[in-house]
Amino acid sequence: MARQSYLKNAAILTGTGLLLRAAGMFFRIYIAARIGAEGMGLYQLIYTVYTMAVTLATAGLSVAATRLSAELLATDDPANVRAAMRRTLALGLGLGAAAAALLFTGAGLAADWWLEDARAALSLRILAPSLPFMAVSACLRGFFMARRKVGPNSRAQIFEQVVRIGVVALLIDSAVPQGIGTACAAVVVGNTVSEAASWVYMEWCYRRELRDVPRNAKRPVQGLGRQLWDIIAPIAANQYMTSVLRTVENVMVPGCLALYTLSRETALSQYGALKGMAMPVIFFPFSFLATLSTLLLPEITEAHVQNRRAALEHLVNRVMLITLVLSFLAGGLFTQFAKEIGLVLYQSEEIGFYLSILGPLMPFMYMESMVDGILKGLGEQLSSFRYTALDSVVRIALIYLLLPRFGMQGFLFVMLVSNLLTSLLNLHRLLHVTGLRVQWMRWVIKPVFSFLCAGAACRFVLQPLTQRLGLPLLAWAVLGAVFTSVVYALFIWLTGCAGPGDFIVRRARKKAGERDSFG
Image 1 (cartoon, helix red, strand yellow):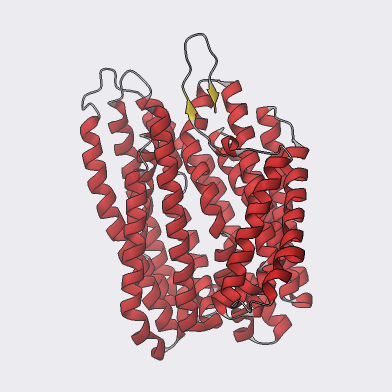
Image 2 (image 1 turned 180 degrees about the horizontal axis):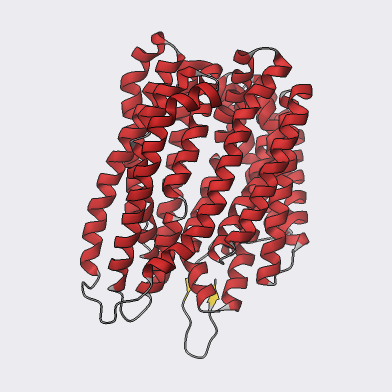
């Protein structure tokens, strides 16, 4: 039953992640077609400030709710989870309301003095009311993950996306003629309305779920507030500092690009093309790995708290293998078919150029995200904070030095340095904490060799055979990607790097006389 439940959750999360990322990516394509690259640049700047406000409202809440709930539900007195959730929800509501008030009252100042674009003020004020809903929803998501029930979270996210797209579709066409600022405001209305709708649904699911939790605790747990702050404080400090540094960085980029291009509009267009159009495409395949990241936090917390070292090491080893095998495939495909993807999705060779540069970085991007989640599950928030702060300082310094002289090429170099730095630092810490060793042959050499063989087969075998057919660009890209993926999978299997069973991460309960393990 545990195995079936785990695989069911994995299937739900994978399907939901793919659906949401696909919908989000095509939603951005839809928006970009209406507001243009400059509009996407302004949209990204607005979300730079909004993201900092979201961090103020939600930092650590989901992790705290998951960890506290998982620990209390695993005891012989699970009723204590009710008190823990009451405290967590109250804290979330308070933080969300404070962040909303700060964003609403400071919107004009942030737009004029920080973003240097008064058109952003209206959108920031519209986004402010969404913050309390996001904070409370973050707590509820953590509770459901502790219960090993991903259905409510997945359905809420789908509902949220449907509402967002519907609201924007109703407003965007009438807003565009009134200018980019009004068009961006129409887009963010969808965000605020959809966050409220998502919270309503999750609150309803939460009330139903509480029916299965005993009401009265036999021995009320003391010090819940202290435990809550012990979890949230290091995560919040990490995310607050990171958010401030990243906001400074994101605001600097258009300004420094403008010094190179001698045009604020051109700088915003380049920034919007990279951040608002290319990056969502780059992270679309991460849906497969995001499932692992989401499912593993309660498992890692449980194994870590119970000191089941063998199970923990085996699980982390498997996750690293899956992450790198899939990310080398994704990065290789985006590098090989960058031009086709850019033209098909955005009718832009510029986007294709960005994808070709970012493609080789995808294994480092994906590994960084996965390892960061694992470290937080191991209680290594302080290490993550140090590495992230160092990375932000390095990025800001390089942006200041390189972008005015080299423009967007300088920013792409900054991204290269940043991803290498953070991914390797996080990996080094993970290896130290778990006692694992890098398996160079399985994790790196065989996947790279397999893709080189697959890419060569596509280039020198499939492409000559299909050239005479005159396939449309989309058909060729799909056919080439599928062919390359199949050949890559074949070589992964033939080289002994991984087999089908290696891509199934399932919970394994300890049997009598056996050690804990994950299969």
